[in-house]
Length: 445
Ligand code: GLU
Ligand code: MG
Image 1 (cartoon, rainbow, N blue to C red):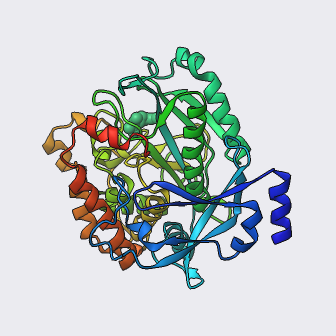
Image 2: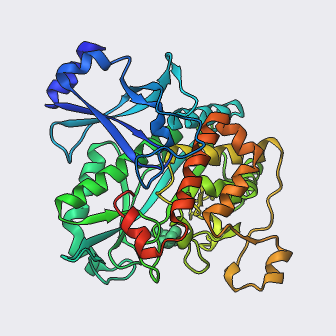
């Protein structure tokens, strides 16, 4: 193992290996180990303070009530299967870290939480396949610190393509070099807003790729003197950045989403899984749309999943079942009530826990919604059980605090630290204006 690893590092001219983790606030952090010191960290990794999982997004200071303190150390151990040379940082490689204590997974490790949920799904005979579909803005900063979009283009604009093709090509090349097949690119609806989608994969790899995707886009944009930001809402009157989560369920190499011969219909298991997600969605949002800024994005008529319902190709429903011209349709669905300020391991793991609850308890899925729920009257919506989802972080946190299924899946220690972090963020930021919030968060996500 050691010899092989050193050979790889030498062949790729790697000086530093960045061992990454993603904290409860979804800040991507790393410790870099130099090649000459790598032997010491191959199996036991590097030490980091346990308290790092108690940090809110605003500053490096422990959130009160997290259950963590300045005393205590855990090991960040590389998962060498994820070792990747960084095309945008010559001489550097990235590896994802697992948090261990006394040689065992630490209860607060987000990556281990997702692994546990993947194992739970397996126990039900299900394999979860996923892709995070990112939207982000290209921005520039004026001499007096004003943040502006790089253009004033519209959805799918070929002018935007011509303006940014160099940077987009560099991003696509770097994603592909790191094993993320790029599927589609198009300028999104906001001025300077972009969308690049990559191929779906197994749940754990999809979450790892979400980290690598954000890292790559930000770094390459910087090389082109651009700021790239995934912050959910940057401009009040423009569309936000979603990070829709695409999902399918598989068994023995077979996609379980379509209902056999009934083209266009969902299978029983898909219906139950989706019903589970919708049932838990108000609480899930404290994990999938977890910042104060997230709730500025989620509004009717912005295609951001503001209503608790599902529909076939309905872009105003929280869950859109995606139709496909081929016979085996639908093959997947997307949860729109997700953004890139969510820790991808926690978000995907929690969505799996919610879906599995629906499967285990045979939840019934309501009717698909075939119109824009934003144009229904309140009484029409209540007849179809369509609720508006939480409109701020305090509301979703309260739901999470009362949700035994999600708290149980997290386990006591992770739940306590996670909720403390988000509570501290709510208290520090709920009175900020959008401008103040953007200033604080733009470079964090
Ligand atoms: N920008 C929208 C959002 O906030 C999504 C637009 C789309 O459907 O791709 O989620
Ligand atoms: Mg989009």
